[in-house]
Image 1 (cartoon, rainbow, N blue to C red):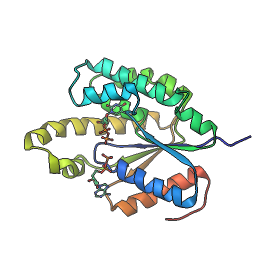
Image 2: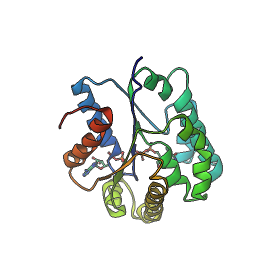
Image 3: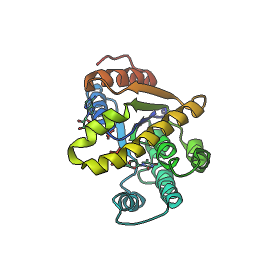
Length: 213
Ligand code: ADP
Ligand code: TYD
């Protein structure tokens, strides 16, 4: 019987370096000849495109409905018969996702109780629990510094509150779920190569391969 693929998730506040690390991980896995499927949330599905319209304020919706949309997007991301993550994992292909349910715990608990958000996602946790959640940890100041380039002062002032609360929610969710979830906290304040070296140590361990960057 074919071995199931591993499910690896990157989490973190905006600007934590997730996209950069996913790119680096894809290069490393390609170089090692390891098959993988890379994906993200919100997805590129029709539900994901509604979410993007909400995020860029073209569509207005209440916060519970937005959280429910992310949940619907995630259920489809897991189970879609054409390109759902379970399909790849069952074929022995590893899946790398930029964000998964910890993003919901962090971003939606700014408006709803975290218990509500965790309960909403219980089915996702039942269907597909990550083999590894990599939380890329940076400070709010680092996040703002990296995002600053294309924002106005007013935007930054507003965003600081939000990023602070999202970061605190991530840390709270990690603490609450540490016995049920495989979580690795990576110090994202260092050089991209140093951060990636730690990511690769964790990933190669989960994949059961011996290789150094
Ligand atoms: P995310 O996907 O988590 O929002 P990105 O990978 O897009 O983060 O990174 C946000 C910005 O910070 C980009 O300009 C990127 O080049 C830069 N960056 C990423 N990782 C680091 C790092 N370790 N040190 C300094 N800058 C970084
Ligand atoms: P995007 O710009 O695609 O991602 P990133 O910040 O990683 O570059 O935007 C995704 C946004 O959606 C981000 O602000 C986090 C948010 N989000 C939620 O609010 N809930 C969720 O469940 C997920 C997966 C993301």
